[in-house]
Length: 513
Image 1 (cartoon, helix red, strand yellow):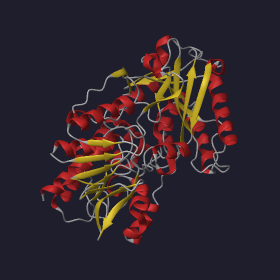
Image 2: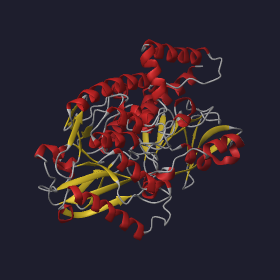
Image 3: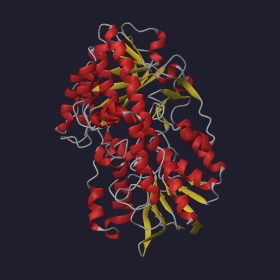
Image 4: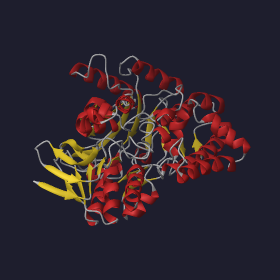
């Protein structure tokens, strides 16, 4: 069977769906091929125990770009919006922050937090401007690229001399020093440290963690929400928009290779031998999977292959799901507190010590956690009177010394429950069933090399002009007609849709030449 399309998109993750929808809206005949039996990539809702469902990987919405929602006419139904973050104290004296307000700290920390938030939102707004457009190429004579670079310089200068210097000073720094200089509360510093390193192979003392904090803030200033029906409802809305625009989506269709003829992509071949032809192939897979597996090193210049192979993208975050017969007891909690975002990160040094183990290929015996109980506001996720707990757990290195055998998995889960019991003493009595997804599991289930949520670390040497690698930051790969549209391309990870939208714009402009 051979079919001809204007564009083929590999992978129905959220960026692939956004890209395909925008290409179809521009009149293109688009095919999306998804290896799994459900669209959404890592942004799906699935059952993990009988009657209990959860957002399988990403579980909070905070980076969705308004322009993506507008372009696709998305109507995302939220179960809860503008969540507060509560950093747990063993004695019930928790710290809570939302927007520029913080409680549970002294007046000095309240004032400093408002100032910190104001500055960081201003810097993140500048960053966000350049997340929603293809990055300019460095060393080019292209007028548009030169203009974008000039605008970046102008926008920096427009902040004023003091703020410009502060931005340039902070952008490559670690978050630890900045927090230690500004705040006294250990819990506040612990929570903000976790915000800066979540999903990364970085600790609070690592360089670039202010950049990762700003990236988290870009778009909606860190405003958190949970979609009704879990994250799968978001990608279902995207899929519906794509289908309405005429996109054909085929699931259980794993791509074996991109077909290359004389340096040009001409289509794809599936595992079952089916071939689909197109002059444009767009990969929502990560850069390593795309270039080293689907394209093959023999089809690409050697130095480029080495650059792709050297992308740092070994995951360090695990996902824990727990089916509960009731909510666990948390000292000092009101009923409404359970519906917020909850962190276990007692101080910035605790977070750094948790990272230390990962440096040597070991899971943290005292991990840090981001916890939600989404069923409180969304009864569709659990049986009546019962609940689900969803937690991101760090640190769990992809390359565990002992491999992720059953003993290692059990030991890590036991470590997590030991930490949970310090704040939720009856958690084991409430637990009916649990599931742990290590980076290795995430790699297998969602086909992400290294199990890295963001398809690669977000550091200055893997950001903007050089994401995924130098010379290929504008979505087109060194194979004519082949593009990237996933989180491994600019601007990076998070459920935002920006990478897919930017890639579609580049492809459509190419077609107009």
